[in-house]
Image (cartoon, rainbow, N blue to C red):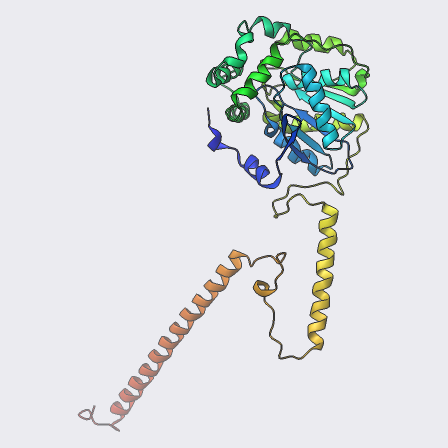
Length: 390
């Protein structure tokens, strides 16, 4: 498997454009990304045991450009579900978000259902992917659960990674596994211990007051760490929920099948009444913009054009001996630098000009010499000049 140093290029670019927020709330440290128009109700993404806020970077990049607001969070260091519900509610209060749409995968989907059950007024809809309704099967498969908090970090990481299928994969699934593994390596011992504790704590999701029409179940049909029986049980609980099945994608379809996942997320948000704001949506473009609103960028561009025209008109009415202003000395950071290819073209043109001048001079000298020789031969042949003088 690849290491952290082999991060994909789009993730490196994402990190350079989208800021990571870290805020302490009480005794909990929250790490999250928040990108998109603040006027749009947010979609909050909650990862599983092997995930961090970074694993949803493809959703943040794509949906924010469509005019949606996406918040991706790390699961904080909580040791019970009651503690999770209180901590997540304080987090929403701190960032001034009152109503949310939750997208959870694996453990994140279970946490999303628990919060919707205990705080139904704050949750408007759910997108559940490869998740479950209770933790009994996980507790039975982990007899050493009481000693999780005393286990060394390498043992916890090894246990988490054994749940990820390490075998022949399609290239896009293999890349998603490599990225997820790199994120597990960034988690501390206490982070892993708290997540494993949540996985084996006896708990189940009660009936939700939400209509099934506000729930989308998005599962993959190939291998997944969550047993198929648990996914079938979830589907039976919400019989009228919208189904979005992916032919493949593994445990991390949001990384391996981002286009399909983003499409299903958009369909879900539109179905539950979330209207995007593309005109004020933050775009992650490669022209150096750092996520500014597109309307503000266009307005700023128009103002700059007006200022340039006024400046050019004003300079025409002043004295003609005024020295011109070059882009390097204009003082504006918005002026684009000269293209490298044009500079190279100019240098090539100068070189060609010099070569042409040299060639022309040599030709001229050759013509002069030839003319003198020809005239001398004519004069000698005609007898005007003796051969001896020549």
